[in-house]
Picture 1: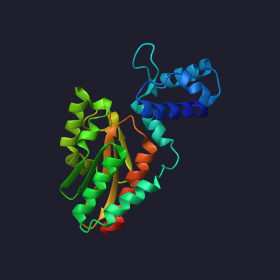
Picture 2: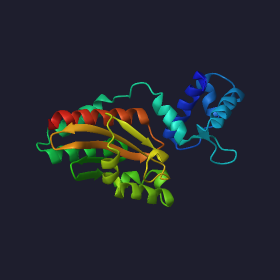
Picture 3: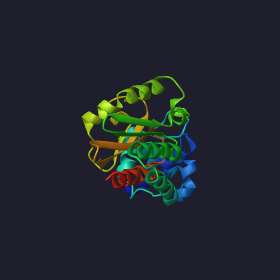
Length: 230
């Protein structure tokens, strides 16, 4: 993939996240100050690499799971929204007890990202934002919603088995061992706590989302909880 193709991939991922509509060449021409034919040629190259796909005849393109993975792997440092981080820090630090701190963090993540917020510490699983999750057009019903439910039903067992060890881990679509066809992405941070060697905080949402600010917020929340609980 050439540098220009990577930039076009980033533009497609970010435009699709905002609009939920397949992205056509005309939408990218002004951004790259080049002809529609040139953009179409670069998009064809990205499609041949299985990084984007055409969901319908005569439609624009959308990223594939492989395309989202290339996007996440090539991102700069995650974006940090200090206003949201400060609000979240106030809720966690004022909680007064461990369970309330986790619940406040999960609820805040759900509210800010529009995804399902989730946290686990020891055998306890905390969820918030289920209604918001199923308001995304990807999960209005049918197979995808069923697969998301399967993933949630097995989430604790899967986290215990997979034991993500990085400060931030991103599982995109088919990378999820459960609910592979759900079109969902799990963004999760493992953090240290005196109550469990496997404590996690994160969100579950559609693969079509603004990765940089969400990853930044989940990463920050993991650090915040580690400081608050230790």
